[in-house]
Amino acid sequence: MFSRSGESADSVIIRMARAEREKALVVSSDREVVNSSEAFGAAAISAEGFENKIALAVAMGQNVQDRDEAEGWKPTTQKKGPRRRLPKRKRRSRSKIKKL
Image 1: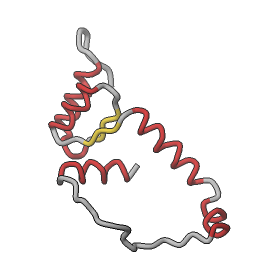
Image 2: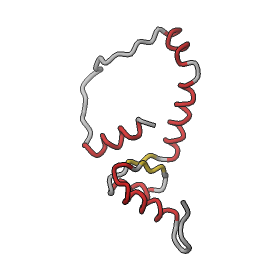
Image 3: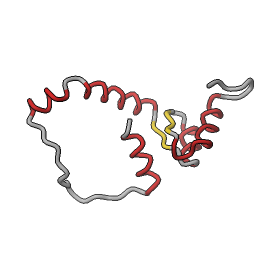
Image 4: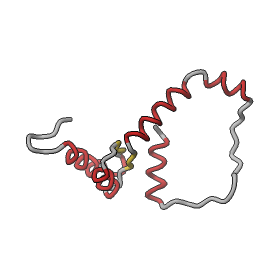
């Protein structure tokens, strides 16, 4: 998608976040874009954070089964200490980012 003549790309991103609301995930390091999109209910992540998530996903995809068996890793649901619950908006945003 391209911006119109005389329109910035940031305003296009904000407009798309306004239209999609909770369905949108905005990847931007621009604080204005992040704040505006979060105000409309969209989840936001920095470009650096997104890059780290992608690199981690690529690394996890390579020999995951071999690594797990070698280390003896077993998934668990055991809690580790007290939990502080985030506000609902932050929990929704975090869950969208985790799905990456």
